Amino acid sequence: MKPVRVGICGLGTVGGGTFNVLTRNADDISRRAGRPIVIEQVAHRSIHPDCDITGINATSDVFEVANNPNVDVLVELIGGYDIARELVLTAIENGKHVVTANKALIAVHGNEIFRAAHKKGVIVAFEAAVAGGIPVIKSLREGLGANRIEWVAGIINGTGNYILTHMRDEGRAFEDVLAEAQALGYAESDPTFDVEGIDAAHKLTILASIAYGVPLQFDKAFTEGISRITAEDVEQADNLGYVIKHLGISKRTDQGLELRVHPTLIPKERLLANVHGVKNAIAVMGDAVGPTLYYGAGAGAEPTASAVVADLLDVARDIATDHHYRVPYLAFSGIDDDASQLPIMPMEDITTAYYLRLLAVDRPGVLARVATILAEQGISIEALIQKEATEGELVPIILLTHRTKEKQMNDAIREIESMADIAGPVTRIRVESLSEGE
Figure 1: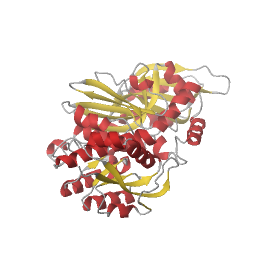
Figure 2 (figure 1 turned 90 degrees about the vertical axis):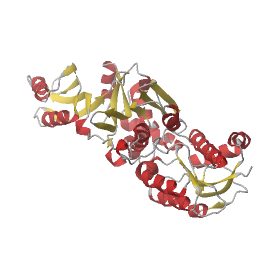
Figure 3 (figure 1 turned 30 degrees about the vertical axis):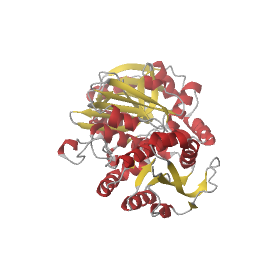
Figure 4 (figure 1 turned 180 degrees about the horizontal axis):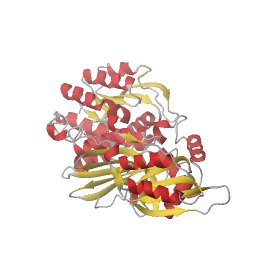
């Protein structure tokens, strides 16, 4: 049969991995696709050192690939928002199918891109945009298609998980482990997207849209990073029976959808609590199947290439059957109809339990005043740890609360921080049990 001709834009870590997997496993891939998948052209500024493109038509202009009439499928692996958006829309306008690993592009511009693809009758595939080599999008969109999804929660950024794992295992400070992660290549020189939750929010936005059949709404996702987590927080969480993880969480409620990324205390016995290092894991609760967990490599050259090439296989199969993409991009048809208009809840309306750490002057009545402030906001205390202080030291006070609204906790924290006997900001970490009853 006529081969499917691919143009790869970007030959960095993921692009180089994709090139190598396509060439190394060409025979098996062709048998699975029912036709050869061949690399027609590549565009790059730099080349991954393990990638040999000898004899391949190469250019430095990605738009040359988008306008190449011999290219059937454009693989976008350049990352970012603006150029990637223009590149993908150009390819679509030229009648090309698109495969991308760009979570930021899909989270921010996906609604526009999918409309353009539908109009032109082409496919946009993006399995690699979330959790690298873990096939969680296909699982949500197809394998769990019979279910009403109740919640999705996951470790979807390996950098943050690496940092928190080593803080817990070795008692080290955030800054120390971050520097190590940068030296090992797990974190960028500017780690903001990873440690402040932006990368995870991109991925959670995509997962939530597929889980609940709503438009992509990245601008409504709540994000909070891990840079203020201390070794003491990690130790005290352990003493209380919890592990701190940087989670993306989305839940269906009667008021709408929760869409939030933040440090979270979860019980030690939960599977997510035992996902370590740079690994990713996503837990999904369906009303029919119950809880399921998807675990594996969330980044890296060939793990992510595994998902990119799997998407290419799907596109090649779809071309062979000569019909439109059989599964809607975000799993639901009529994504703009009334059924998809579940509102994203403001963070202040979300209810959860909390871990609080504050530093107080060792004087009588300070803890009583803190407890009074919490009680006035309707917040009850589940557990309390207060360390002994030596003369002149500030006393760390650790509180675990029952579930309450974020707004009430915000109001209480503001009042606690205004107390003369409290030093510095209060550390607040949300607590989720992620049990089957949630």
